[in-house]
Each structure stands twice: as C-alpha cells, then as structure tokens.
Image (cartoon, rainbow, N blue to C red; front, top):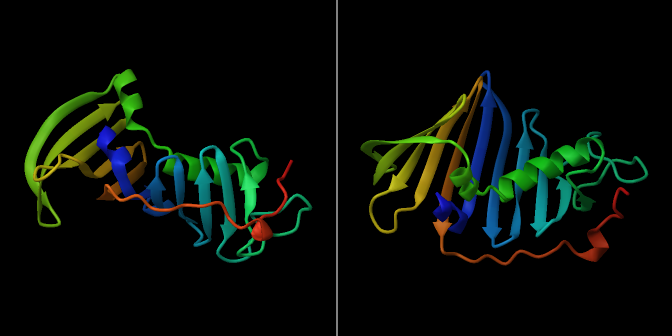
Length: 189
C-alpha cells in the first residue's frame, strides 16, 4: 500500500446513507498537493497544500467560509487555513489535509487483518483483491498484477459510511505552487 504514495492523481469519495459526504480530487507531488473538495450540498473548494501550509478558495460564494473580518471569501481569493482554524475553515483544512497526506505506512503499526482475495479485472486490467479489516472498517484493495504491483482502488465501509479511493498516474511529478500573494488573504489568526 505504500506504493499509493507514488500516485500523482487520487480521488476519494465518502458516502453515508446513500448521500455523498465529501468528494476529493487531488494531484500530489511529494509534500505538495492541490485539488478540489466538494461537499454534500454541491459547494466546492479548490485547495493548495505545501507541506503544512494550506490555502482554500471557494468555487462560488458561500457563507460557510469567511475571512478574518467575517466577510465571505470570494472565488479566486485564497484563505490560509490550519487544522486548528476556527469553524468551517478548520473543517476544510482537516478534510483537505487528510485527502493529501493519507499515509498507509501507519497501517503497519495497527492491528489490521489482511487476507488474499481473488484475481479479477478492473477496467480491463488484471488485479488481485486484498481484503482488510480493522474493527468496523472493512475494505477491499485492488492491486495491479501487470507491471508494478501498485494499488489502483480501495472500496470500503465503516459503519454506515462507505468510501472509494482511486489512484492513478504513477511516477508523474506535477508542479504545485503557492497561490499568488496578490490573491492571498490575511490568515484568520
């Protein structure tokens, strides 16, 4: 699963009770990441992450995201946020950071029951399924069996919530930069 860290393009969708909670499309380049987070109400935020620094901008105006004065953040204006930021800004930082810094090597330190599944095909490509279980989290990982054995998709369930993550574009190094200073707002604190 550590090979998932080499994927440039990652897409994760979380669903609960048939309703989409979050949909994250991200492009990774080392500790840099950019992408789009869409919530269950159809609002979307573009994000840029460079190491521990996170900036977000809405795709359309929303009362959910306000700057340090309480005014709505305009599309195209980037608000620096942190996981500890108050209110919705902190929630956005948590979701975007989780989507960009998912590290499977931590599984090695946790009790996860893994069993070999069946050989199958995914989008015409031969794969091997691997089933993983940890508490109430159950998932199936689809590993490529041709070329390098990289993860292509994981489908899982945790209680009433389900998730799907897809990895693509292995070995590509995108250029990801901070937003222009002229488009960056002052931090919340």
